[in-house]
Amino acid sequence: QVQLVESGGGLVQAGGSLRLSCAASGRTFSPYKMGWFRQAPGKEREFVAEIRWSGGFTSYADSVKGRFTISRDNAKNTVYLQMNSLKLEDTAVYYCAAATIPSGLAGKYDYWGQGTQVTVSS
Image (cartoon, rainbow, N blue to C red; front, side):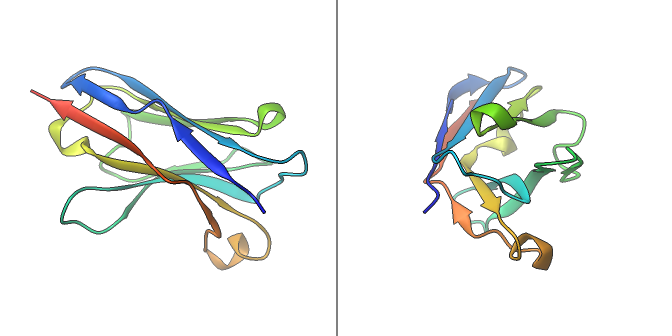
């Protein structure tokens, strides 16, 4: 069983930066890809960014492209989300997720963290 634990959330002013981390348990952790999602109050969960574990290919939602950067440290079983130029609309609970084969090949994530709150103030 894989456990994902997010950290790094908090309160930040608009225009500021924040770095989220997501650590996965287990030495045999080897996902197909990992990603970040977020959910604001009253809204559905939305995709933010993802990265393939082996090749490092990344993908971003249009709303965060150019401001957020997803990265990984395979040796540490950790994925990061560097968030710059934060906006009020970035306020949400951020979740990390992992997709293993075959779930990832089907476009689905099968492990989720509990989330970390990011609040952007004016």
